[in-house]
View 1: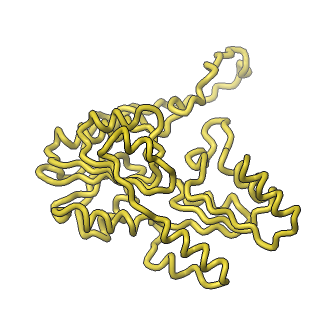
View 2: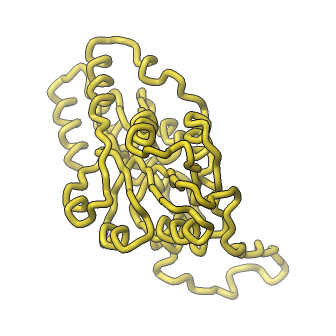
View 3: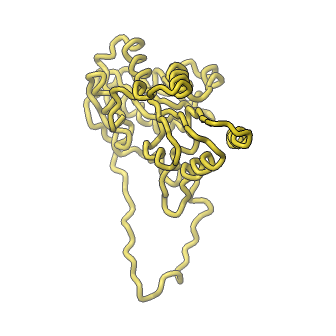
Length: 283
């Protein structure tokens, strides 16, 4: 809301360009309609455009398609070069590592990391609770009331069979290897803890978690400290100094350099293509 007020103030003061730098785009997980819910990312994009924003710089959107919600230019920068550099410089035996996707949904991201580091990939399938289910973000409240008389008696609409999660399996060999779990957001750490326990059982001797946005809300630092995870590496798109004091396992990678370069290039009217070199469709 403060951002919208400031943008509108600049617009009413006849600013030529109003560029928003939002390293972590909020509500980015709510970018698709589930059942009859709202698409909050679309609402937020509309509000920003209506307030008067002319350009947006952000980093690692949860889904790249969110850029289509805006009718202004959006530069979706990537943090993966900084995280890859951290792996190469700070993990001495990274050649003995395997990149892990904690769910099939994040397999593309894991594949991108694995191809650049020339490493193998493993995918965890059948987790106990899907991190993006309707139950997690409260969309089942208030509880649905079954209305028997809502459908005409002559209509028989077939119901979709509910999904049943298979038992947890790891597709790929992690025995005697360093496991590096990659994702874009780490907020509720339960799914990461479950993945770490599974990898430990399968023989991984060190477990790292790499994510761009470290929200780490509630008691996430305490849970990480007590878990089998050896290190959580996040960028500073979101301030997390308090969480670092609570848990020494949390490490920070500075990405201010790429944001400042993007601001400089836009201000001077230079090309932004240099910041997107070697970035493919799946990155």
